Length: 90
Ligand code: SF4
Ligand code: SF4
Image (cartoon, rainbow, N blue to C red; front, side, top):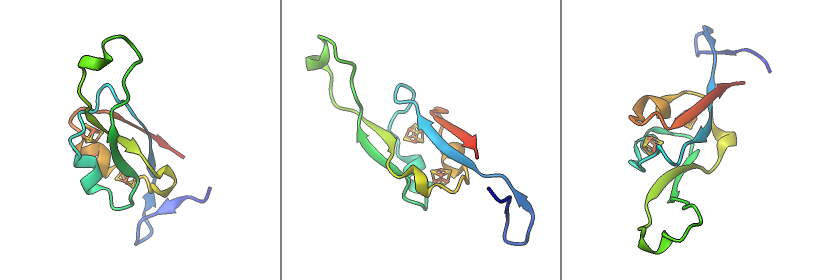
């Protein structure tokens, strides 16, 4: 892949959103609000399949809906207080 640059030509290394840890995510939506690329979408938290399911309430977590649209700006990581995201360079 060709090296990325900023608008005025300075080197830029994107760090793309790779994964979200559903156990750490509290569904606050902060990452969703700052992402201008439509990468993220809130979903119901997937539960482990065990006998206690009936007593649990649905909780929202953030998911990667369109990872291919990510430009690796890391704005979502900066606002995540739970460090629930994993980013990787290309
Ligand atoms: S790195 Fe930037 S473009 Fe990618 S999901 Fe996070 S805020 Fe959106
Ligand atoms: S900012 Fe972090 S804790 Fe909040 S919804 Fe996004 S990934 Fe989850």
